Image (cartoon, rainbow, N blue to C red):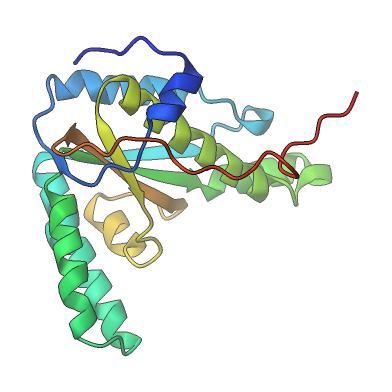
Length: 208
C-alpha cells in the first residue's frame, strides 16, 4: 500500500467510479485503519459525530453481495413487478461487486440526531439536514483516501432495500440509518481520462 503524493484537488481530479475491482489489496488491515482515521477527522455540525461505519471484507463481503443484496433486491423487484429479463443484467452487476476486496457501509445514527434536536431545539429542523451533510463529507473523504492509497472505489445505494437484513446480520442498532455502500479494491481495469464539467458560467458567482 503506497500513498500517492498529490494535493486534494489532484486527487479529486483523478478520482473515478471504478467498477472492475479485485481483492489484491496489500495490507488490508492498514487500509481499514486509514478509513477509520479519515472518518474520525471529518468535521460535523455541533461536533455531533453522527456517522457510523460497517466495513466488510472476506466472508462478510461475500455474504453482502453474494446473498443479502441479491435476495432482498430480487424480492423487491418482484414485488414491484419488474420484468424477469431485467434481473439478468442486475445479477451480473452484483457479481462484479462481489469481486471487490471490501465494502464500507455508511450509516447515520438517528439516536444521536434526535439527542441534538432535543438539546438544541432552536436548530431541531436542521440536524437531519446536517446529518446528511456529515454522511456526504465522510463518503467523499473515504473516497479521497482510497484514491490516495492507489485503490479504486464506487458508490452504491441499495438502501433502504437491504437495511433490515444488514442490521440483523451484523447485529447493528436500530438507530443506524444506512446512507450508502462504497466498494473498494485494486483496480483491474482502471477508468481514466478527463470528465466533462459544466461551464463555470452561472455555476460559480464571486462577489467582492
